[in-house]
Length: 103
Ligand SMILES: [Zn+2]
Image (tube, rainbow, N blue to C red; front, side, top):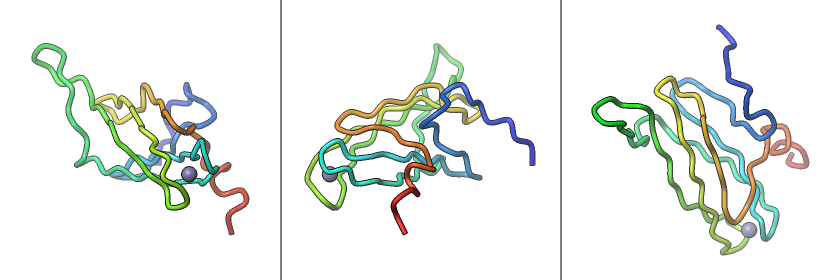
């Protein structure tokens, strides 16, 4: 399997699994770590004039531990690389950070 993941984003970049795009978040209020899986079917195509340039993700997330609202905004290229990602109300963490401390 070719490993051509675009590492431009470095730390905090979600891993890419077949079919799904995964983000790891941490609640800015209580510190709860959350794994957010978004299937390609949920992606909303973004158009530049007539051609499809990629996809937009806009998702509200509430954890289990507190009512703090987090909002994820991300842009995915047509090749499913993440070109932009931002979280308000929390922060993006790496898969390693997500796993640390749990289990
Ligand atoms: Zn929380």
